[in-house]
Image 1: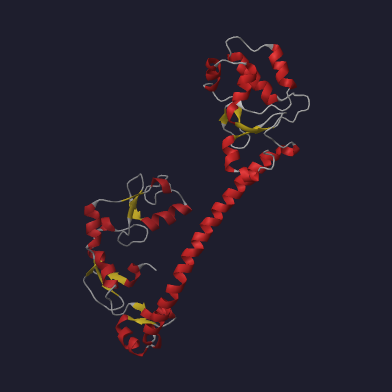
Image 2: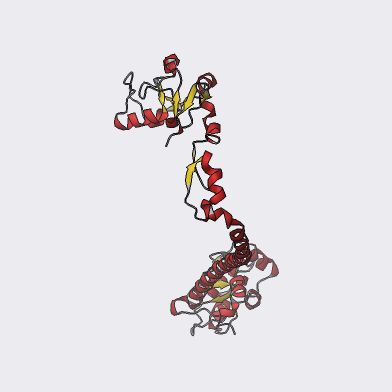
Length: 305
């Protein structure tokens, strides 16, 4: 309920007509104007344009987004200084700007019992509150309830903190399990599990072939075809940059050039670009996992020898 309903203006006929809302015929409450400049109570004009979006005076079309509250200090001060009478306690000469202050002191203001937080249902005029408190059974047992509440709080607060900690740990564990599940799915590779050894019986390892082409394109003498053929025939070639470098007889200079290239391989687990020397697991038909992921989830890897 609007507080202003409990008050009555004194000498309404003496109030400046420029301060009167033409919709409710009372002094402005939160004066608000449209683009046409006519001013009304904020609630009055909002309810009006809900029915028809035009100014009640000049009929110019207006919308809620075009309304603007009046902030002119002279107008607001005139409204705050209007004299009012409290209908409940009959006190007069209350300035409208002091209504909230009067509400805190009005003897006829309806207030609840301070023990309402412990289930006292009494409500009454502020002037009768003191008499009620002398007889209120809830107020009398408040010290006992306060002691019990504090004792329970001392027990439950640590439990609540522990529960929050467990929830955080559970969320972290869920994230780790999700990462482990993703790693295992990548590792098993849809039925073609990755390993640290070439498993292709014909030596047709795509990872080795791609690495051989990359090394060959950066060697000073080029990669002879027969060396590449020998590499394909080796079924137990370890995926190690140094071993491949030795088999291809690539100079330190050319290998260094390869190491500085933009990462030519992509880890199927973390989706990061990696160099050949950082491949820990692979499948000969394609796909590899970097050393960082294997070290992070190594306990889940049954294929490392």
